[in-house]
Length: 263
Image (tube, rainbow, N blue to C red):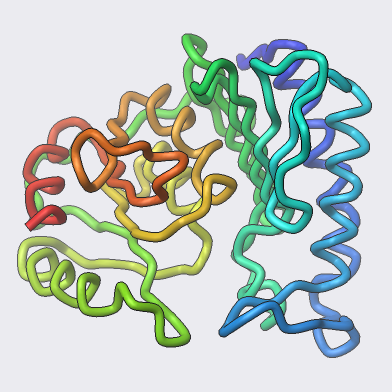
């Protein structure tokens, strides 16, 4: 049975409280007041309210920690400059606003530049993925382990597809040209945090994407690694959290998969 640290318990409590607010508005898409942030990138009152709840809960419990979140951005570090919360109050905003039940809350704790704890919560399915460095990965009360498949032709991978004229479309199409002939399929479900959680759970065998934000992937990094998976930058030697380009996957197929992504 999973027994989380004090910090993980704070994160889980905050995620559940924010989820209650998001669930109240989910399904009432037509009534949400939505403003445009950019091409295919929306922000809703529900999103902003969830971030306010998370900030109140997380900084209320740990006021000395720093803060980085999707809507509010970064704030000056508190009295403990070695730690900060990295938060996405609503990963999969477009899904949410279209009434599609695939979105999540993502919370990570960074210590001295390393992600040490992560929580990804899918409120619709009541799936709480969580991990702490050295303590394994969990889905609710069940231990997680990445897939054990050894043949790419049996594997299912996940990625994101560039939208709204993003410049990385040609690269992504080349990736798909190399990967699709080798595997059982590629999925694009529109929530990076859940893509990584599904790798940890063995539902996906691997995941890759470019031009992500730190709050999209921070929690997923520790959850995948603690489930026995690998997470690396697409360009070797890069910074995953700051760079936003990553490959995640199960150990048996990771080397082959990563080689295909890198071309």
